[in-house]
Length: 373
Image 1 (tube, rainbow, N blue to C red):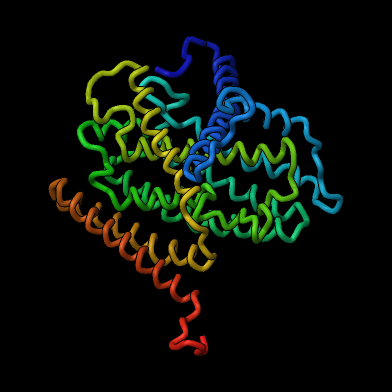
Image 2 (cartoon, rainbow, N blue to C red):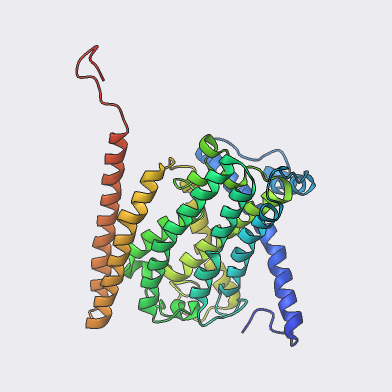
């Protein structure tokens, strides 16, 4: 059953769906902004927003009013069309990707046979928007931020897509509804912990969150590609960031945690399924916020080494493992064991690379008092 399928007229049905998404997205961004400030504030022994409204709950609405009424400034030397279209190129594909996401077995906008392929294809178009924003601003910091954003997104799209390919191999489908149905007894995080870890790391990179916030580093590029944007246009980039956060979190819940089915493999009603999805998605959202307040920023060389020399080879290894299990019909527990051992090896390699890279950047200690470094 489709969401709001009571409308027989296709045009009216599409308009109502569009209005629902347009209403829920800004409210969701306001709530997530308040939640992130509270989570990071508690981690840093602060209270977070407290002044506007009870417990600061109205702080997001105050910020929204400020951004809407703030003057929209454009540099005189900027490329007008590129500068003004960039926020739309960033935010529209992310919103379009939500069309193919099922929230429960009965609540979704469109159940696409190639929904997983559609989400990956349409969401990757945001890369063009960040490059446009950096190029069109006619600002060297914005240009550097745009180039960094393009390089990072293009690089980490590869392990992200390959980890999803590993999931699609087990489900033998690109339909998200079918993939969830395959996890009726055991979520695929058990069978593919390696793919799950790689998907989570690549998801962090896609969201520009620590330790992958190089494209927007204040100490280096003063905010990155959006440094020249203000008011409503800057808020569109903020809307895209938090919408992508929800998109990645829901997708991870569907692909690896069993969506609305596991662990209650029974015929739950729509509200119970929605509550189960809300809990799983919220866990991922809080995890991403936790990483933002915990991890230091990577250097650009560390970021590229992690992607091309570590994540991509291990993702290809997961695909090879899945192929062997499917071709030779090995039992499921062999997939879980081999992928688990590979995941442990991945974490060890990342830890060893981080220790080696950090040690190389530190000056050697003096061998004796007064000795040369």
